[in-house]
Image 1 (cartoon, rainbow, N blue to C red):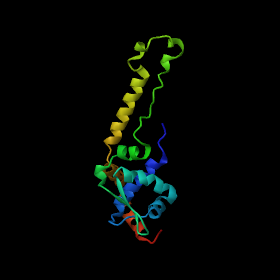
Image 2 (image 1 turned 90 degrees about the vertical axis):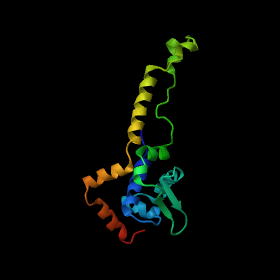
Image 3 (image 1 turned 90 degrees about the horizontal axis):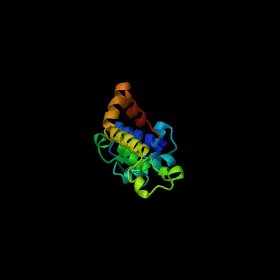
Image 4 (image 1 turned 45 degrees about the vertical axis):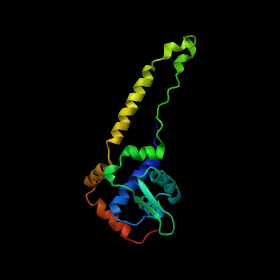
Length: 162
């Protein structure tokens, strides 16, 4: 399974919006500048967060994005689901009904195969772990790693930029 870079970009932008501490919308160009990202593509990644109720957006020249709720109420699973969708990563093709076992009755395959069971169990644990990680906790860890991070972000964004 490969998670798109949009998940990383979206999560970082949520942290950035909180660090900036502003009440007015922040333009995509301004958000993108902070990470050296292409604004048009970043905008496409942030739109699903609006649909999911993580961000709000305002159109127009003074428009942009704002957090719709606090970071403690946003999990990594929320961001992942908003960007990637809710579909499960593993899709069992039920190949055991082919080849050697092709002549077996359908009743022989009522129970899921052991691989399907193991993969779904692992994915469920992974999703639970992501759901247990709030962006507030991640932000706290980031600030422990770089104690001046909030101030650096605020100083950088005070400078005139796009």
